[in-house]
Image (tube, rainbow, N blue to C red; front, side):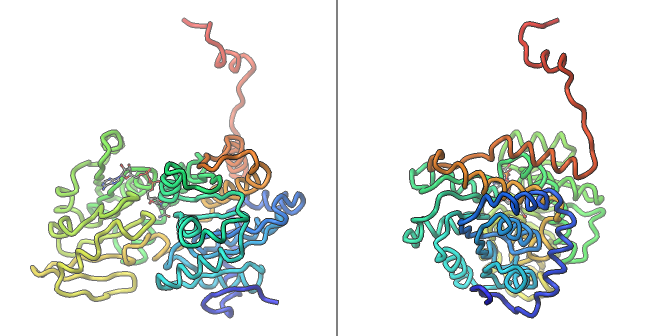
Length: 420
Ligand SMILES: NC(=O)c1ccc[n+]([C@@H]2O[C@H](COP(=O)([O-])OP(=O)(O)OC[C@H]3O[C@@H](n4cnc5c(N)ncnc54)[C@H](O)[C@@H]3O)[C@@H](O)[C@H]2O)c1
């Protein structure tokens, strides 16, 4: 019997399986965890509702959790990031309930979240905290079995910390995003590469010689600016934090206010986690043909409504490109409806980087299953031993060996009494 689901087309399953298998080649750490989970069954009798981007990498996480004994239900964490063939394969081949259709409207998106919650999960896995927000808002009635949860991204962690600060978080959550093996690699190298990939696929842009403005120089922004520079672009960074601005300047990027960057930029990429990082005032200063993309979690970083209301005309000029014609004749192009462009127009992060993020997820789920009775209703970082183990396994899988401290070196590093 096929489990409960709502997906686009089950006949896409074969292609989905191929995609999932291809991704698994680059996910050796998660593969090792899956092998151990099969034997140890650390998640038996655990129902996990996971609101994640429905991609081939997420499918490999779902398969790993299931191997560990869990009953896994997946729903999309973004209406435009679902790979429909992967969703079909999850249902048809891997017996994982999936509620996700690429391009679903807002109501369907939330109905899918509710369908996942109606399984009365023991654990939540979230990417952006829409699942947890729904559970703490209108569907509190579905909370009774939950022992803990995990959160994948910066924006979700910020929302959960705010819930915890108000004393309203009802169970412990592990901030997977805050593991070194997550944000050092996924946010920086994953978002860096895949954001440029998404913009390239959406536009066929030649990066060399372009003025690329990156708004926000956090983990994602560092990666995006570094990769844009590597493609031969002139990288420009806009920040609101002095230290991050200083870091960007010393990393060799031009740093300026967005009002100044708006006049010279060819491509604008927001990765702030905030709202209206690019607003209509900035769009009014931009050159004809400017490209605007967002890689932050929610589609609120570009003031699309404001730009639309200032424009005379909007037309789709290419898949993923909406062109707004302003009263003075300039065209401003917004990519992927302002949703994270790496997942909208490309395939999201490369599997090799999700190997670490999702290994952190799987091991954090195991940790919650074992330790939930000792955890408070607050946001925790990933335990250090998990973070270090994921790093060690990844480096080993890459065939890289590193040195080991001698006993003498270790003693020196742990002493206070040996000086000059
Ligand atoms: N596209 C993806 O696949 C992907 C992957 C990981 C994270 N994310 C999302 O990307 C966003 C950024 O994540 P991060 O880890 O880099 O966060 P971060 O907190 O490390 O960095 C955000 C930076 O933006 C700056 N900032 C905030 N508002 C600004 C504004 N109006 N103008 C200029 N700078 C501003 C902050 O000072 C900070 O330095 C989050 O929403 C996160 O959830 C997306």
